[in-house]
Length: 135
Image 1 (tube, rainbow, N blue to C red):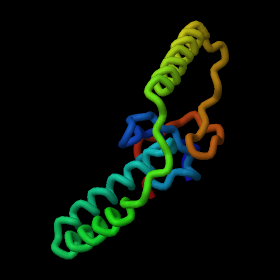
Image 2: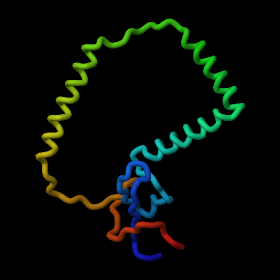
Image 3: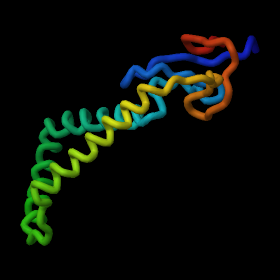
Image 4: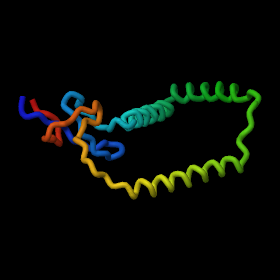
C-alpha cells in the first residue's frame, strides 16, 4: 500500500478546503457542513421543475395546488408580531454581534493544532493527495 496520506479538496459548493482521511474518503465532493444536503435539494428542485413542464406533471401540480388552496381557507387564529418588537430584537442581535466580532479580532492564536479529518476528526498523516488513489 504506499505511504499514509490524506486527500485535500475544495468543496464544490462553498469552496472550503477539506482534509479527509483515507478511511472517510469515498470520492467526496462536498464538505460536511450541509453542502451535500443543499446540493441534493437543489438537484431535486431542478428535477421537479423539469417534471412539472411535462403534461402529467402539470396536471398533478395543478391538482396539488387546488388541494393546498382548499386547505388554506381555514380561519387564522394567531396574530403577527408588532413591528416595534421585531426591530428591537434585530438591533440587540446586531449590537451583540458587533461586540463579539471586536473581541474575536483582538485574540491571537498561540497554539497550532494538528490537522484532523473533516469527517471523523482523526489526526492526519503528513502527506496530502490532491486527487483520488489509483489502484
